[in-house]
Length: 236
Image 1 (tube, one colour):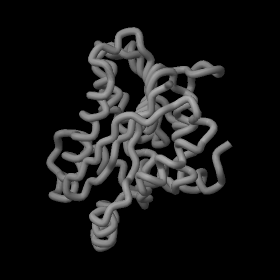
Image 2 (tube, rainbow, N blue to C red):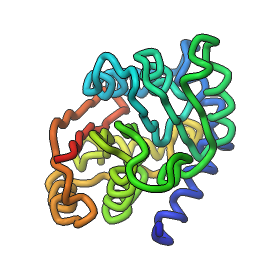
Image 3 (spheres, one colour):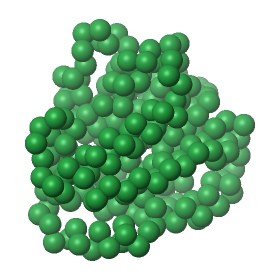
């Protein structure tokens, strides 16, 4: 069961993405012109999305993929174009509605967008329901212990591979957070919680729920006001 601190932060994240900045994120994940700050975030997110997709097979025909915290669905759509059967879930009804509007007719039967908690996606109730689970920039909002709980929960839905991102504890990220307090609230996201990579690795290695998983590739991406690190877990 998710901890009270996870549930509290989840509510804050939902309020931000569904009400405070829904229009901002709709524009950010489109081709619409954005401010200089948001342009760096868009560029970083584009690179991170490309990285996660590069870590998946080019041909996903016959595979099931969960996009946990899908936002407006850009990664989900890309995976569906590769042939995957995609289930994409997000807390924000507003972002899910926007994601559904973006689904082209040829992908209509291959992708499902649903409103809900990323730890409780619809699907088979027993065992791993998906070949691959991807969670881009969703774990970054949670404290280390809750983040480990999220990672373990997502791994419980995966058969082959879990790809996720976290906010690495770097001097640059700390400085940007301090500077970010001076920007308009609409340019801010909910508090990102930096986690030292070595502490995250130790936590993953020590978690009995992740005993069957090993850490694979990792990549740090820094583009202006975007800093995030991808990590791969593979079933052993």
